[in-house]
Length: 415
Image (spheres, rainbow, N blue to C red):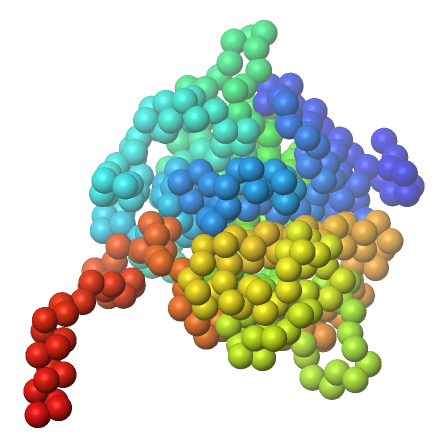
């Protein structure tokens, strides 16, 4: 198969998983262009990203606003902790037959049958089987790592067997096999099992360490055709570009919600455009709490076509944040998601033009490597903000005040 620009393409249709993924290789690069199509959904151009949900919805946004002002291709919800990403570390680790997770009613164990039941009821478009992930230490002994890989392989097989469709039917959800953040020599056999024994039941790979793609892509031709979902969360656009360069097709981006909560608006573009007078790297965003925006009538980002930048200005958004109006954070979410949409559109255009490598280097030169800190108060903390850790301090300020006690203290001070 050939693409419109003449680059070599490879497609794989997985009838058992009811999904279709086509990819176009880019000469001299591991990064690739692709399109992921799922039944009943619009085609999803890759590389791309997925928003992170809390309790099934993107924080600060209602479904009607998402439909009206945004165009997210997908939303990620973690069953192991539906309120946040990354999940809270549990007091107890996983067992041979279950994983321990944090629910709205406390910590509990989840078995494969329980997970199968949940996915059957929720019917997600894409599902990642249970994996034995790191607990407290990210550098456990080799014996522990081998056990993690063995458990994951067993759990994937059990999940595929329990969700196997009838001979004439298709799977309810596309299955993306988990690939642990474990050194390649310790899980090459598991990867070979995926490539040779259960490939027909898989629709993609979910990677907890994207660096492993440097071993997977050259060594497993059959896995090379599958779409790759990164569950290795990047913290900046620089890290997103690194993952795309490694061959990731879809990235999960929790930092969008975090930066919006901090009151910071994205200002970067890809490919990067710089001012000739700029002698220092430019910030990735602007702190909307800053006093300099009190009377600023400029859009959040010059040239941005999002609803916020075409309808409102910086002074209005700063007023909303200072007044603790929920609309302020909703507008930030709309803007920041649109900036990421434009970012990935620029990435795909650079891949088509063969300029991705040069554009990535230029981006690294023109932008700092971290987002600015928000200097104001975050929105009132909700479930996805709390980590439920031992000794955690109160996040929200107490709004109730003992008036009589306050007046008594004032009287004593005046006396």
